[in-house]
Image (cartoon, rainbow, N blue to C red; front, top):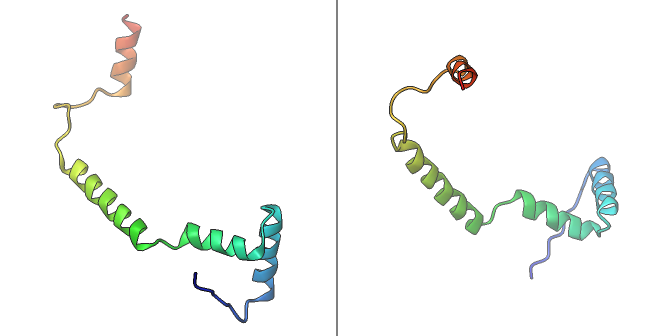
Length: 83
């Protein structure tokens, strides 16, 4: 597994990272890995996002299932009162 060394970390950032690691009862190294995992997508993540986006575009291009206009909220309330 590769090793990553980071130099010249600003003091305020380091202290914030340290506090976050303490809150999560984790080491600073494991906290950094968790943050990177959460915020840096892998090629597999990007492929999944592209597939989802493609499906969303396909879904969006389909015509609506209901033809005609939808009733207004006022019309729906009047209909409910009549029941």
